[in-house]
Amino acid sequence: VQLVESGGGLVQPGGSLRLSCAASGFPFSRYVMSWYRQAPGKERELVARIRSAGGRPIYADSAKGRFTISRDNGKNTVYLQMNSLKPEDTAVYSCNAMGGARNEDYWGQGTQVTVSS
Image (cartoon, rainbow, N blue to C red; front, top):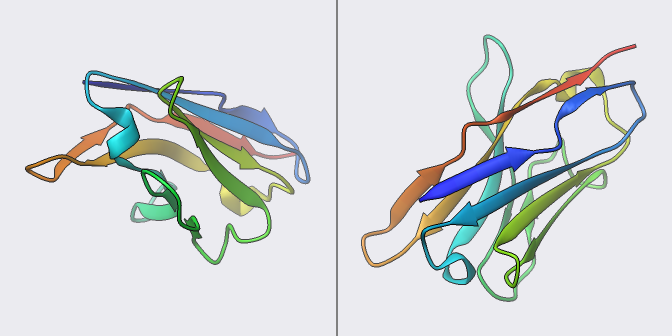
């Protein structure tokens, strides 16, 4: 199983980034996919979640109206479009997959997002 995030980097306040998480080794289309983030000295928090098929994604209050999670089951990839970025969005963003007969839980290695002028 692999979850490989990409797209992080340094961006100025008000800017945008698009994170990608490429998955392999499990039936991606059947899994709930989520983005989490963890800032220095803080606990990891859920940013956004999208179910395997249909349904409205859920977002943390801090992400509503600015972030959009989407998935392409044909490419086994989940995305996080982040707009109007703020310094408080600075964190390591990690991709998570949850599902399967045993309710497996898989994590990527994370990608750093830094919002600074």
